[in-house]
Image (cartoon, rainbow, N blue to C red; front, top):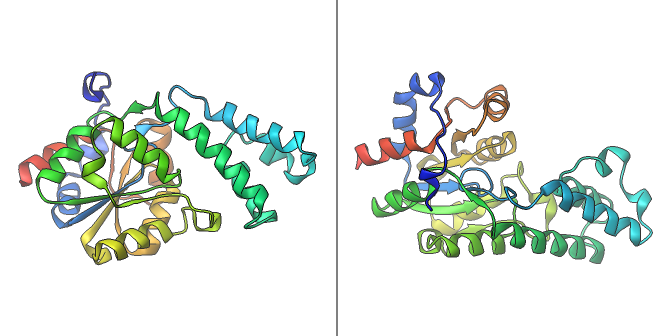
Length: 249
C-alpha cells in the first residue's frame, strides 16, 4: 500500500500563503538533499526509539558504566542523545564504535516497519524524472537509508549519494558535514541546492552550508519548532511540493 493512500496530511494556512516562496525554492534547486527520518519515512513508527535508547543505557550499565551518563541523558529516551554523550567523553573509542553498531542494528530493524511519509515516494520519482539529482543527508546510518530505499525501489534515485552517520559523531547535524560531503561529491554549488528536513538541526546544518531549506512538519509541534528556529517555508504535506514540481516540469 502506498504512503499517499495511508496518510492525509493537511496543508496549513501558512503554507497556502507561501506558494511563491515554495515555487522559488523548487525552481532554483538542481540538487535536493533529503533528511531521511521524517521527510522520507517515520523510521521508528513500528520500532520504539524510546526502547532502543533504554536498551543502550542498560547495555552501558551492564558493562559497569552507569556513571558515564548524566541523569538527564539516561532519561532522554533518544538513542542519539545517548550516543553523542558517550562520544563526548570517549571520542573515537571502541566503546563508541560498539554503541554505534548497536544503534545501527536497531535502525535496520526499524527500517523494516518504517512508515512511508505521505507523497514522498511519488515526489522522489517525479523529481528524478525531471532531471533533478537527489541525495540523502542524515544522522542515521547510511546502511539504514539504503535498506529502506532499496525496499521501496527508490535506491536508484539516490545512489551513490547517501551520506549518513560515520564514526566522527561530532559531525552529526547540526554540523553541516554530511551536506558539504554531498555538495562536493555532486559538484554543485550551495546556491543550487535545497534541503528538506524536519528539525531545527536540519535547518541549522543547511544554513551553515549555505543551502536553502524547506521544512516538513507532520504535526503542530514540528511546525512550531521549525518556525521558532527561523524556517521561512514549512509544508505540512509533501503533496503541495509534488504539485509545484509537476507544474514546473
